[in-house]
Amino acid sequence: MNQSTESYLLRIFLGESDRADGKPLYEWLVREAKARGLAGATVLRGIMGFGAHTKIIHTFKIERLSEDLPIVIEMVDSQEKIEAFLEFAEQHIHRGIMATVEPIHVRVYREGKAAS
Image (cartoon, rainbow, N blue to C red):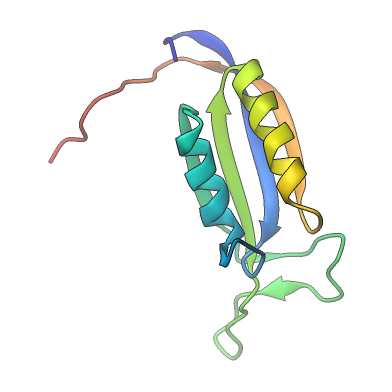
C-alpha cells in the first residue's frame, strides 16, 4: 500500500465466542486477511456491548467475567481488496456479525521490521 493514498477501513463487529473452523472468528478473519495480503488488521476487545442476536448486554465486571465480550476488527487497504475480502468473509460467516466500510486517507504507512 502506498503512503498518502485513499484507502478503505473495514470494521467487523462480532462476539468473542463466535467461531469459524474451530477457532475464534476474530482470529480466523485476521489470518485470512493476512493470507490475502491486506495491509493491516487490528482486533479490539470491548468492555461492553450488544448485537442483533444478543438478549443481554455483555459487559466486563469483576463479579462476572463475560465469556462473550464484543470484538471489533479493523482492516485497512484499497477499496478493491477490502471489498474482495468482505465478499469472501460473507460467504463463510452466516450469523452474528456486522461490517461497515468507510473511505479513509492513509497518511503514513511504513513497512519493515519493528524496532527492538
